[in-house]
Length: 209
Image (cartoon, rainbow, N blue to C red; front, side, top):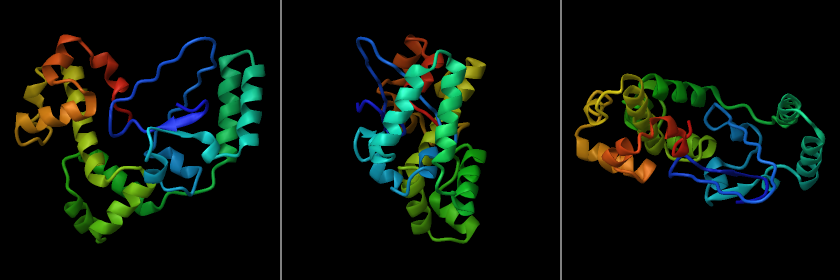
């Protein structure tokens, strides 16, 4: 992991380990993928490796100045203010309206949609949707849709404390074996293993949307 970096937690479980004295500040951008607002580098290029240095996105001097300011501050509120000022000053790109509408549609459907259906609904080609998703999210739209549908199952099960597997059909999965395979892809656990360790409160350890 770079000293100052970003990593992709969309496609696989992610774990960060540290040791010794360190300054650990994480920023979560709530829109998919917020990092695309700060660079013209396509997100699928950014996320080709496990982790990407922020020095590939911002200049070394910008990063060093920011780190110096953060170290000098004494309160968390001041650190947040400095980060906000820095990020706002680096906004260079607006996400196209079509992309925002696509993302909204996927979320509103809770992942129960297909790329072909989205293409028909928005009167665009499937290729256009793939291009936008790879550039602005970092993964293809099929993976993103699967992740949103997976998250819907997790949120439903976490709220109701119902049987995890019993919620799969309600979320649009055709069968439990399909869900189990996808569950292991996103979490490295089987559903039963996940339930045994009582990990609903730890969902963010292996996906981040």
